[in-house]
Structures are given as structure tokens and as C-alpha cells.
Length: 344
Image 1 (cartoon, rainbow, N blue to C red):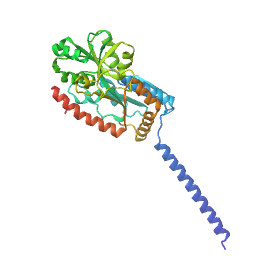
Image 2 (image 1 turned 30 degrees about the horizontal axis):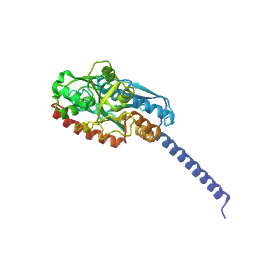
Image 3 (image 1 turned 180 degrees about the horizontal axis):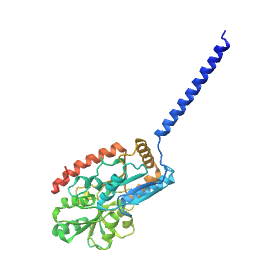
Image 4 (image 1 turned 120 degrees about the vertical axis):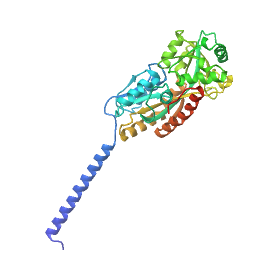
């Protein structure tokens, strides 16, 4: 038989154990809460180009769907920071927002081109900001105004070959960036003197399109999402698209011939993706990675891609980083062929 003292001791021990376990449970829950992260204030998505272009469209579509589907519950806003063919925005983001969990950045292929070419002036590459996810791909286009005398891509290339100085191309990036390379690759196949090509850069596809429509260029080098609504409105004529095959699933673009079917064996696609600050905590990187993945799976996002005329090219952080590094090698070789020195 247990004595009263023994029973009392047993009760006390049991009470201590229960209290201890409860304490551990609270401590564990507290640790889990500390590990979890979610935005606590307004979130900003920076598009490193002006309003009206492809980057701006991505940022605004993201904020709209994040809100509509309640994927992110905090308010969101879009900030446009054009300049230097994405250099101004990416440098500012890397230097000022590296630890800001409430700010994301939208950039595209020119981001990496400005980092590897001699005159790119950008110290920022995929190791200075965090590639969160690749979102979409946008095929290149070459377009002219609806009143242009050039009816086909061959008409334009023949004129450029005969007298390169007579054709001014306009695009939304500095020389050597993606818009420029889109026209360079076609012109090279056409036998045009690449060093004699006249190319005027603007800050983003929207500004370049305005220049074309204002008579400040003979032809525009851009991408499908930037040009599609203007083609539908009858303001431009798209002479060629850089897709592998005709975009038969797109009611607006399906009549546009590819570069390849016009005997210019070139495929050009401009990726767009979302980045976070390099030094934000891992829980924040995890949160945004999961939220962007959730966004990319929504029907609303897929419908919007189709509406814009872009293709789905989702990749997670690792896949996105690997894709960028692989492209660095490809474009470096192209710059060498063009006689442009690249950064070591």
C-alpha cells in the first residue's frame, strides 16, 4: 500500500510533467511561428521598365490575381522604375531592397545581357539578387506601322541589306540587349551588315512602340505581348514572329508568318521572371516561392498568358537560376561573333 506521502509525491511529479510538456509544446509552437513568415504590410512589385510594356503587364497581372484569388491578403502596388534597359531598376533593387521581404522585382532577358556585355553597365546578375521563379516566355516580333511600305519581312531585310542606313529600328532596350539581338539575329541570316544597322533604344517596349507610331523609326523589334493589342487595333503590321511554328492557337497572331518559314532560321524568346532580395530570410523566400507557384497554377493566370500571346515557362528558383546561367554562355558566344567584348 502506498502511504499518503507517496501518493502526494506522485501527484506532484505528474503535475510537474504536465506543466513541463505544456511549456515545451508552447515553446515548440512559438518556434514554428517564428519560422513561418507572411507579409505584414503593403507589398510592392517593381517593374524595371515603363508603363505599357511586357514587364509592366506581368507586374499588374500578378497583383490583380494575387488579390482576386486571395493568394496574398496584404495590399499590393506596382512601381515602375525604367532606365538603362533594366539597369536602373535592378541596381536600385539590389542595393536598396536586398533585405526587404515586402518587395519583389520583375525583369527579363535584358537583365542578364546587361550584366555580361561590355557596355551593359550592370554589376547585378543572378548572384546579386535572388531568382525566385521564371514565369513566361514571349516570342520576338518585327513590326512596322500599318502605313509602312514594307509588306513582308523580306521587303524590310532587302532594304536593310541594300542600304542599312536607310532603316532605323527601334526597340525597348540598349544596343546588345534582347530587343536588339532579336533584329540582329534575323538580319545576320539575311546577310545585312550588322555593324551598319541603325538601332535607336528606348526604355521599354511601350516607349519604343510610341516612337514607331510617331514616325521615329521604320521598324520595331519587340515581343508578342507588347504588340498584340496594336495589331488587333490595326495600328501595326507584324512582319514576322520568332516562334518555332505558327501561333495557330492565337486568333490574333495565327496569320503572322514565323521567321523560319520566311527562310530566316531563327527562334527568339524573351523570358520574364520574378526576383526577391538576395538577403531576405529563408522563410520569406519560401513563402514567395510557394505563392508564385500557386499563382502560376491558376486558370486566371493561364487565361491571361493566352490573352497576351505569351507562353507558359514556369520554373522554380533552382530551375530559373540554372536557365539564366545557361543563357549567359549562349549569349556570350553571340557577342563574340558580333565582335562585342564581354565581361570576364
